[in-house]
Image (cartoon, rainbow, N blue to C red; front, side):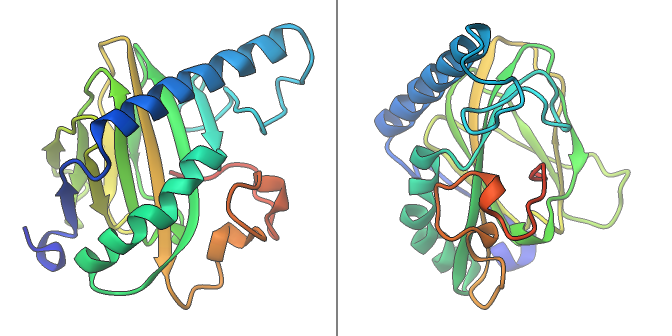
Length: 209
């Protein structure tokens, strides 16, 4: 597959499936801890540091911006992605979700900080992602299936991508976002990876994945 022609590429076993399984179980635990902290009123439902359920793209589904374990993947995978896209990158941010039955990820493009986006399937049930690499909004798009550890790279701010209604039980995904090396959006304007979004200079409330 030629990235320059298709604007996307699949990397099989970008991380070892055993690592993907670990991160999937970690994400489930992270969600359960968040639920407990909210139920016991130790934290507010609007405290985003532990994850939250008010993501405007997929409401009522557990999402987390810049979890340190997920952010650790950004520099690890960057070199592999650079070889495919053939230019240098800088890490911007990670964003993970635990999708549930009935969820839909509507057609969208990512914000400018996501010049290169990648979605990594961590575990749970398989759920296809669709890409439209043309300017024709009516095009059905390419259907792509990923196994745990597989990575899909695409032009996040240029290509529409979406997922149809999820009919199974649970699916863990992490999005890894990058920009060109000379970008002024390094680390999504945070001082370092792993920090919550209130450390961003522009302090946007919601990442756009």
